[in-house]
Image 1 (tube, one colour):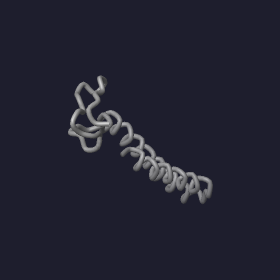
Image 2 (cartoon, rainbow, N blue to C red; image 1 turned 135 degrees about the horizontal axis):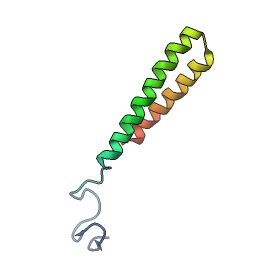
Image 3 (cartoon, helix red, strand yellow; image 1 turned 90 degrees about the horizontal axis):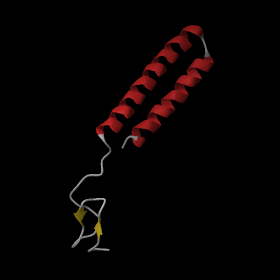
Image 4 (cartoon, rainbow, N blue to C red; image 1 turned 30 degrees about the vertical axis):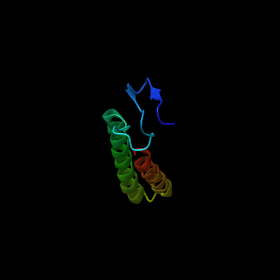
Length: 80
């Protein structure tokens, strides 16, 4: 629908479609920081659980470390 405007964008899209217009819709830097902190905290818990799980021969701690690792692997794509 070329030629219409969106008042919430503060500019007109007349003469072109919505694909490839000249501004970014990237999340705010606070959003990126929150994901980075979440990933870092989870990684530290994973390391601790693996270390203490091995020392205590605890399958539960090792399983939880694996679960937390899957959470971290899910946070990576979610941050994009």
